Length: 295
Image (tube, rainbow, N blue to C red; front, side, top):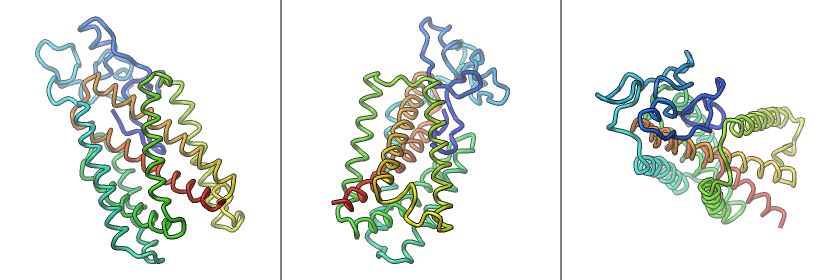
């Protein structure tokens, strides 16, 4: 299992023609299932990729299928929930403290930008590490929380109640996405992941170009990120992309538990969920502000 960060994801449980796929399912048949459906076994396509060697393939138990992971210390749903609560709790505490301590000033905004950049760097470092680092993940959560606290307070100063509405909206998106996923209305396949990721990359590149246009004065009103109807449409697309990445998170967690991913992989699950919930919250906050401005 690897983190599914929307910008720099490179982790997955299985391989499909060289791409990190999400359409695998556990196979029936005892030991055969351990070698055919388990992406931590040596006989699966993931292990055949010379650039994606399974770091757990050497840790076997007596009598276990070749290449199977150890039977102890595996990731469970309780582990994922606990680690996610710790990570999101850190974001929340840091955001509340930043809201309470820092005034709405240009200095505070500069501090928020600095915290956001540090959080981004920590997230990048963790995403390119082969193993999860709780210190990096919690550090990311703390600095991201400071950023969110200051930004939320600034939005609240101009659009009273916007942060609370954004929190409710984020929880609604998370709940609806989980419901749709569990009901089987969305089938997370490698094709689904490829198309969604391609759209997400195009979106990020478009936002980067738009930011440059704004900085150089070509689009002084914000361009694609304006506070008008176009900005609202872009915000809705961004929220839908966040929901898309949540479905990849759900599939990765489900596969990790099914295939016996190591216990520490729960930290990566928590990291992915946190990154995408923050993404959705920020877009929801902006969307609430746009609709409030049009009243």
